Image (tube, rainbow, N blue to C red; front, side):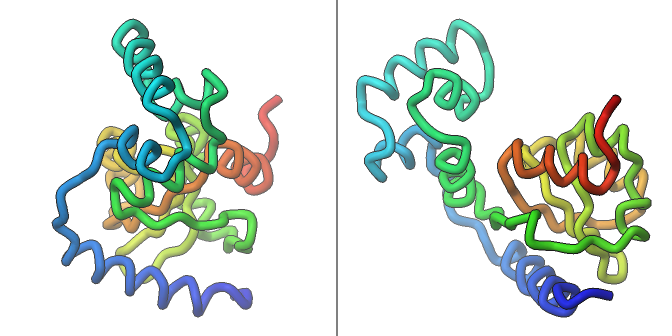
Length: 167
């Protein structure tokens, strides 16, 4: 056990109970960024046009166009999806938790397990709405999931730290 474990477990329990109560209507990512003056109306329209042509995730398009930073998208997703952000680099993860999810799966779905309390696995994901990823994690671990969100780059660093760099 490390010094973060008790706080992490308490935090997971609070998040799980909060997620059962959350039922507010989901806002559009572009509107959240527009309302917070992170993007302009012109940038929003351009990004929507690009998304229509390419079909990629809207946040990836905005980042690729240079309109926003990765952390801006994550902050908006926290608001949109009511999934909490976690600074994965602040945690020491027990090796027994890491071993619950094979490195190949962590890399494929851009996620990393954080902690387990009974049958609830806390997992940090770049896309916590990815139903295929969540179904695979549930199948592999036989756990319910408490998803958290972090940036792609934060998760990539954590995967390389805990599973080793890909050769």
